[in-house]
Length: 167
Image 1 (cartoon, rainbow, N blue to C red):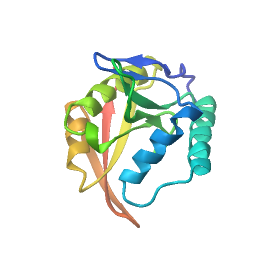
Image 2 (tube, one colour):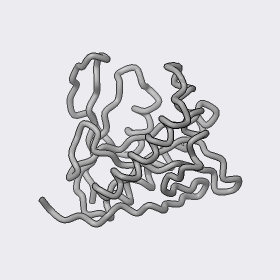
Image 3 (cartoon, rainbow, N blue to C red):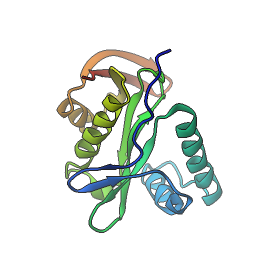
């Protein structure tokens, strides 16, 4: 297995800051999960989610990072690299925004910073998996140079796989 540099854990764009999770993010994570419509995790479960994210970052050198507005510091979602359905060598990009932040280009902006960070690790390809109904995520990924690779099906339905070569 090739040796990769760890992903940068502090990313900034014109409007956004991405930095590592802290336990103080628990209320924001709970609110984001509640917006999904399948219940709200307990504060204890949310703290465990954050602890697992931090442990995974330590283990893999990949990070899913909270996104905040640079000017006011409010939490609007997350973006980063995960092993997910892929591998440490060719990780997946993942992102999710609070509903109030949709439609403003934040996911595209954050994804650009994460793609640059992935390239700096020495990796040569990223993956993304998106449910076939998720048109906004397809738009973000296509703007960032991802192309459809193939489609698979699991218990939750159709899953579209996209990939992007890194410089």
